[in-house]
Image (tube, rainbow, N blue to C red; front, side, top):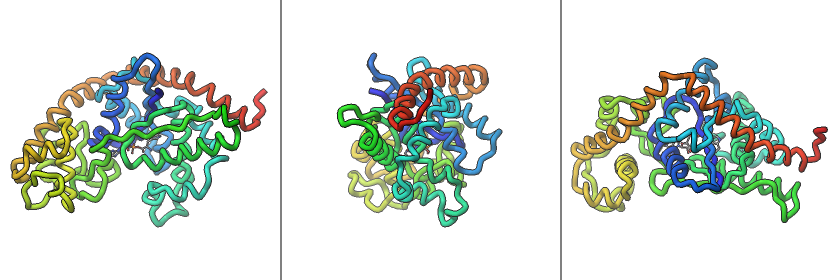
Length: 338
Ligand code: TYM
């Protein structure tokens, strides 16, 4: 088993990233056997697809590395790196550009959402972003990719690219690329904004009240939970009763994910309660989950050199893993390299 996944180092790590993806990364790392490996990376090359501030990107990359370690990614057991130090990712992207189709990329919902009406003004990188994402997982022969729901479409594209490349350039008994499986958590694959239950929790939302950041202090967390949008009804005792109540469902989903229980279980206990009672209970659970993470995060940030060293060591290991697949891709395409 080879587990590969990434996160963009833009803004803070938030609860959606944590419950939708990072917590699964840590679980998969902790369950690894001797023949398996986990590679987790900061998608800094993806981050330049939108306008950005170079100094800010540099800072955010180190901060995101600290956040991942604080959440439980162990750089001794997992390979933790940033894309910019592993050039095989960008190199394979170019090679895969010959296989990816314009029509496939045109259908990507993230491209449509992020480019909006201004397609002519969007960067080329925003359009070809999913090809780099495919290269990220294919260059390491990923078998499993833990992600939230919003990244599933990109993973399907990675599989389409791998399949077409294998068909076009390999023999049937010796395909070059492994088809990666997305792994999403059963309940928390899509954590929604605290201000609008129809939008996912996201670092690009201009309102900080819409998300819980893993670096928020206890007072901020409690304030955000208490101000979260809800409805006047009390909680039902069964899941069906949350139909059409997106904000209420989101808060119950978060509570269930944090306490490792099902939504039904939480409703069996809290059904009948109003939000005046449920929100403080949720706030407490959140504060207790975040307390050790933010303590460790602040501690790690004090030693930038140690963070640099973690990323440099992870990158060296990632380059070793990626090199044979990249060489085989050049070869399969008939490119002469001496
Ligand atoms: P990114 O940086 O937007 O998010 C990182 C991970 O967090 C998940 N996530 C969520 N899950 C549940 N609810 C939410 N509200 C929520 N918001 C984010 C995402 O699904 C993701 O798993 N393109 C990717 C980064 C990437 C990548 C890759 C991922 C680049 N290459 C290769 C996997 C494999 C992205 O921008 O994720």
